[in-house]
Length: 220
Length: 330
Image 1 (cartoon, chains in turn orange, yellow):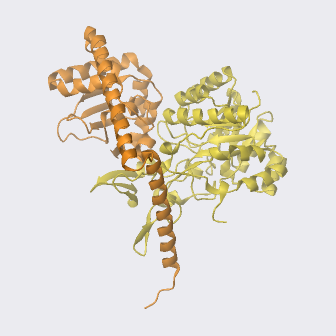
Image 2 (cartoon, chains in turn blue, yellow):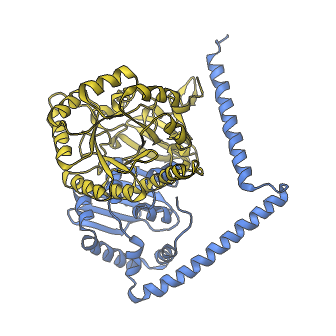
Image 3 (cartoon, chains in turn blue, red):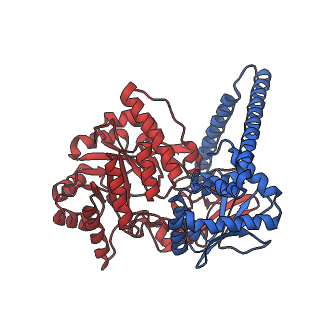
């Protein structure tokens, strides 16, 4: 499970938000062109086993991305509104990137409701399995398109990430202190765990009651 | 291989997952060929012959073992595919093959007398008479026990079975007679036992409807998960069924098996090896589960106790159970 957003991803997301569509299309075209060079086996297997059109819909961005796999190779583009696809994957950008780069198990993400996959599941499973066999660096490839600007931008993003992370930790500390003050020194995580256990217990007891009701002879 | 506290047998659906499992601390990796000879026959998964040869070389170079699962049941007239899989596994240097079908066990023991045979859980052998048959007739060296026995029952069996015992430690859990589940075939025409797939992907569809995630298998709705409710697989045995107007899990619910807390008891019961389920899962899953079990086993071996590692997030339905290993309903 992703616990924090790595700095380069902040930068990528900022780039995706700020770049005008023509510039973004150019970047995506260059990434597509580099794929057969950097990942020849992956491209060959995708074309052979998982041809189709895959839509990626980051819920925290306005753009959607279309990956076309076919005789022309593997081409990543911006999706037009209403663009049809064989399968679509929806979730936060960080989740989708973790999934595509092999850091996140798709079943785990599905169980947690962090992503949803709709459409032709056979193609989606084949795509996922083939992709999982290769290590790719989409964020790195994206940032590399900015040439000599990439390293200083990456460092700036790392600094920003550290500040955001520190602020997040401070906020969690404040939340915990407020909670302890309001609840006589109880640890909020322990309270949450206790509440969860109580809910589980109640579910169990309701289930028992339901079974008992079902077993009881019906009276009219 | 140096004797371990318990041998850790880990899944690999792809060559990358095999390398991940070895690097994360697996003692042994199991995998299958890219066809219906193994019980995880999903698109884009498994190994061709060249990949299997390379995977075995890689594992052996790191002092680990590779088991090849050929654990489905051949269809009439098509047994050559299964025979070829056994021949190739032997030729490529697999440390053992995992078989379920009596005919295949007979073929393997007759044609490859030096090849170590493990009895798959798909054979559903769970008593001494059954295990003695496989041991005496085919010379099996290990049996993977079905997930229907308590630790006490496993202990009693191990004393008399005369071969090594391997038990499931983590992964999927279904309510079934292992190896004989054909529930999926009524809905899709394909089953784990003959085709290597339960709820085949081409029959599965997901959709979002009014904030719910709806899972269908063919035309039938298997489940509707409420907003933020953890989800499971669209398998028929874990469908949320409506009886008398009340939706509930009549057979089994979406939950994953995790008996990491029972490892000392299993060791004491005489178990040899632990199996992690999940060849259909990603290398991220393999890395996380294998590292957790490696750390726990090493700590138990060294200190006699180990801190609890939480794996619930990667379990089906984000929920864990000890299953039949500790039957609370008896």
